[in-house]
Length: 397
Ligand code: SAH
Ligand code: SF4
Image (cartoon, rainbow, N blue to C red; front, side, top):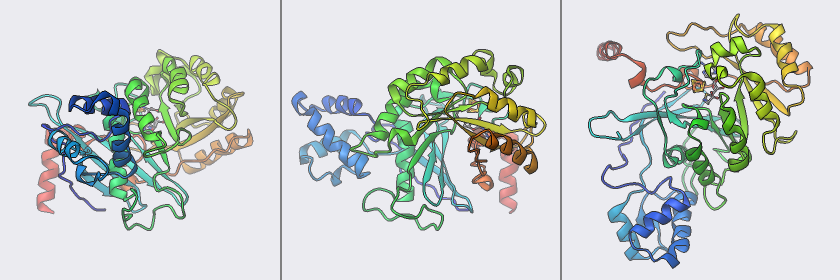
């Protein structure tokens, strides 16, 4: 494990252009006096430098006029969210604790997390859509955070930019030395999942704007089929997601009966299983080639019986689906335990025999608390007393 700190914080005085959409960039350029008839061209130039090349300085932008560069330099930065801590797991999983400036004087800065999971043939970046989450799923660590705010589109895109900076994935950059990175010609960050902190469909506009920027073919260019939005079941926003953002969909199902799902995912009281599955059946673009992923966290003695598995396949009948069994990742203070390995295998066998590939998601980065549902920034997680105890321990180490 290694810790580094990066002090290139987004300056409060000068806003950053990194993470902005084309429309937002055009607005900023107009503010500094770029004539209307030049806006498209100038946005195109900046877009290339910011999102294709990953520029960190305006001085690199050699095809932008000197005067405009000087003006931009004076008023803006290209800063990303500040990396407060970087942790690297033994399996190559990388977790970044990112600091976002406080919104008003006296407020503490916000912290969010992004996690990179390399595999041999792909690399998945798990990003956050909110600081914390309002939804309080009983098995999820993030749900216990008190402070919640939506991330801006730029803050969402900023997570992808930070990850590319730190892994060294911009053209001409040197990739970080790590034997766990994907092999071959493919991208190091080939897939994006909105499975970090927050409920993305409670921040739909910003998530959509960020997806447009990330998938833009002239920039970062991660296609929409490689971007998955995971929701705990915000039914009214599922159709708009398919129609307007066009990404892959993942549903955090976790239970096959409303009484149990009400307990695990309290949002189920508002949008029960039947309504949720109806929205999945009519998800725009859904097909056997574009399946919906159903996530199912394995909780010992709670939702992991063979009957549950049988009911699960019955429930999903007729929906082009993948089932993702997630071993529960424990966190301090949780009342749940992860199902035993043979129980998971039995469950998975039933799902498999019904015709579903049922990969059990191997927990990644457990040693750095980077696995699903373990994300929660330290300042929120620890009480003042706990923090003092930790500091005391660190001093006597
Ligand atoms: N809010 C969205 C996306 C973020 S959560 C959602 O709920 O879908 C990403 C995934 O991690 C969800 O499937 C969630 O149910 C799962 N998860 C949460 N806590 C977990 C834990 N402790 N162990 C395993 N998976 C967990
Ligand atoms: Fe929020 Fe998703 Fe965690 Fe539920 S599982 S509390 S919706 S982040």
